[in-house]
Amino acid sequence: MTPEDCQNGSERVAYAARHLSDDFDVVINVQGDEPLIEPSVIEALAKAFDDPNVMIATPISPLKEKADIDNPNIVKVVTSVHDDILYFSRSTIPYIRDAQDSKNIYWKHIGLYAFRKKILEEIKTLPKTELEEIEKLEQLRWLYHGYKIRTIRVENSSIEVNTEEDVKKVEEILNKNL
Figure 1 (spheres, helix red, strand yellow):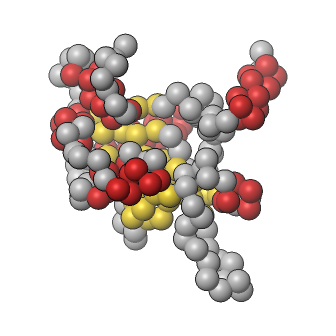
Figure 2 (spheres, helix red, strand yellow; figure 1 turned 180 degrees about the vertical axis):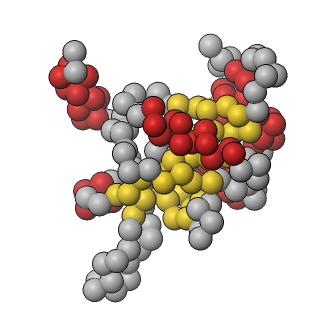
């Protein structure tokens, strides 16, 4: 267990990583709100680090249902041409200004992060930002301070647990598989 003074997920992961052997370079944090994550998503995330320039990576998947696109519990992302995150938001991003423009694709952030071990020590010391406080999304701190977050695009998205309704959905799925 991590100390109570760890204020967020990356601080907890950094603390845990300090207590592991030095035989590895990459740490993958599977957050507790992703109990049904597919192993293939974790494998794809690990593979991103074949590129030595990747320091932080996270998976994303397409969002197609209007209810999901509008749901503030589902974090949306916009990426660059290089698949690096430009912004995370609980709001619907990007905003489609002209109703006839329906070619836009929305992307959901999946609650996993992978880090080069050395980056964990850096990002845990970054000061909080106004954007992070407004959106309640710690990863905006990293972007604000200039860190790139590479995305891994996957088709299979799990059910993220953010509400009591989500807990019931996951329990139903798990009970069916027993």
